[in-house]
Structures are given as structure tokens and as C-alpha cells.
Amino acid sequence: MNEVCRELWRVLRPGGTIVCEMQFERLKRLSQWGLLEESQWDPMRYMTCLEPAGVVNVKIEWKSDAKVGEYQLVKARRPVEDKAFENPDETMRELEMQIKKEVLIAELLKTRRKLTKEEQDILDEEILMKK
Image (cartoon, rainbow, N blue to C red):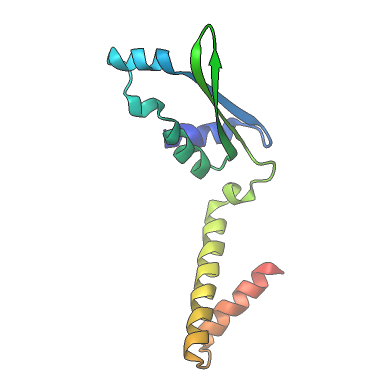
């Protein structure tokens, strides 16, 4: 499922919307016949896979219709700007530096000691990244 969600994100144009409709009675019958497992159409499974894939505004709408019964719409949108997903290595490096900086500042506030050269470089690199 994670791979499917990443592929949906990849082929969806920036700003585009994904809509997935599921009819519960039909899915229950398919599960009873052994063609699907209930975990394959669990709404929370969609939520937990779509968001990490990079889509935003993931929503589940519960609907009812006289002809088809209860059904569900899962909607999500690919952000217009998603630079974090275009270069994941750079995003990870930035996140790592942010965490190092926060840990360093917390420790310095606690111990009130002088910075080492390496610690100063960490703080300087963070400042340079913002310029």
C-alpha cells in the first residue's frame, strides 16, 4: 500500500486531487468470499499510507445512497509546492541539522558551558542554510 500511495503522489500533478470510493457491502462480500482481507480496505490504512507519501488534506467522507448503500470517499491532495519530496536527501540533511541544533541549544542552556568549535560549526551551518 505504501508503494501504491507513493506512485499516486508521483503521477498526480501538483495541486491535483485523489478520490477513492469504497462500497462497504461489496467489500464485505469480497472479504467473505476470500478475495480480500478486511485490512485491505480499512479506512485508517489509507490515512496512514497517504500522509507519509506526501499528500495533504487527507479526508474521509461517509456517504449513504438508497441504491448502493453506505460508501466512503477518501480524498487527498498533492501540494502545489512539494520541494521536500523532490530532494529527500537534502530534506533529511536539513532535518538532521535542525535536530542537532535543538539538542545542542537545550544542552547549552542546561549546562551553561562554552561552545566547542564543532558545536559552533553546527550553529553556523544552520544559520547559513537559512540565508
